[in-house]
Image (cartoon, rainbow, N blue to C red; front, side):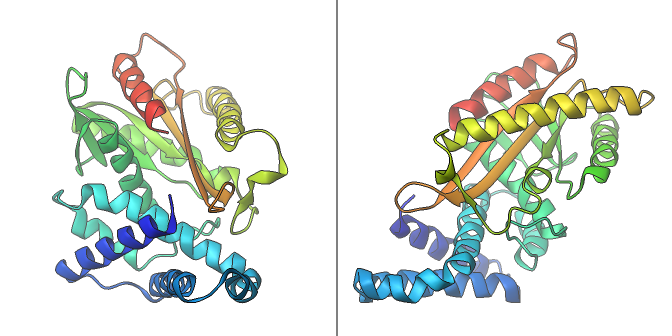
Amino acid sequence: MDYEQISDNLEELLAFTETQRLHLGEDLQDHVDRVNEFIDDRQEMNNDELFIKWDQRFKEFFQSIFVVVRLTFSVLPLKTHSGLRSVLKDILKGDLTQQSKQDPGKDKLFELEVGSLLEASGFDVALDEPDLVISGNGLSAPFGIACKYPSSEKQIHAHLNKGYKQITQKRLDGCVGIGMDQLVFDGFGSYIDFRQTQTPPQELMQRELDIRITTLTRERSEKYPSEHPMDTGMMFLCAGGVYGNPPLALVRVTSLAVTSKSSPSYPSMRIIHEALRRMT
């Protein structure tokens, strides 16, 4: 994504929040202002001047560009959906940076990000309990996804339990979608330098996610045998890093966490997973 597209998306997002009478929190406003300042400088400065000013501010700049790109990606495809406004209230006042700090805004943003990925993959998406309900695109019936975004290892099984309970209460075929970002990248700081290895970022992250799923599935079976087994789950991993030109990579990967292919949810999960893999 080039800077012109980032600028256009940000302008569209701000116009939408204005029509919805939604206000940006102080942290988010700082990120928006920083991105707009950089975009203005690109038009008015030569490359040397731009480098002198922004090289020493790269870490804070990257945090801001990451927040803006992820936010616009997650919100704009769903802006006509009912229920979006109430979700956005928490998101716009939250801390959305790529850090391991727990924040309700990040939880809600993850829901919208998964919803936007599914919408772009060809599914009809409703912002409804358990968190998302999707249909169409080869699914034989509506399918629920309970989205969970743990910020520490000790939270993950409680999140899984809550997600499975939500699906059961809605009496839907469904699965739990877990965002692994805050667990995998704990302590990595504001960005990842993907240039430090010759392995492509997508492959690197897919490998890490698959390892995490194997470990989590085994741990749940051994330590929590009385809880709902990890037979129907979907894992997501997203990271912002330095790669390419412009030096901004927002990489997303997904994997299934399925211990039994006889699970009633498995056929639908395969359809969803294949559609997402084509997108990410």
